[in-house]
Image (spheres, rainbow, N blue to C red):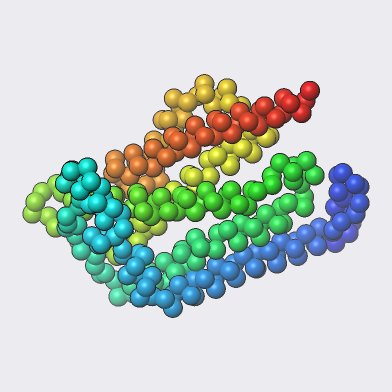
Length: 279
């Protein structure tokens, strides 16, 4: 039997739906639309070079960045001048002939992906959803919304909280006063990118716990029992996915601990619904 003769049946209704090659064709178009959205937005970002680089990418390296201004206002309100960052003693430089052009392309592609992520995930979900049973589709309602929401919150937290405070910490860190901080452009961009992406991925913890709880692989009792182990794992993840400074690790660990507690409540709710439906 050839591949184009293989047929897929709906388990609930037993109706013939699509051949194997039809599924591959469907997947191809979903991927084409998803990748096209990234490329289109990447081109828009690439053409908006002045705004994107000055107001987005390089913004955490300047004292007029929103986070630094809010910290100064908080310092005035609480009468704590230490909260206000007065200087960022470093410069960003490029030492490669193609460095700026390469970073321009790379950053455009990354921002294009971040902005288009909700649509990309929606396209992927549209391909996956028909293969789920009706009960599974019922339990996964709102998946695109909540995954996109958590991803966006992770991006914003990484960009507005972790990135500027990490930049400030690393800019002021010095092993000797005779050494000036002159950061390579590619290193600065990769550090900011890594922080933002890591935050976006780690903020998906509640959704991961939800689906694992639905599958019966996790229970609230297990999560509570291994809470201390989870804290250690979270700190390790924070160390692996953020720059090697304690500030970044602590900042990423704090919301993750909160998300872990929220995930326990989510798992408990799933478990209660299972018990209720089993009666």
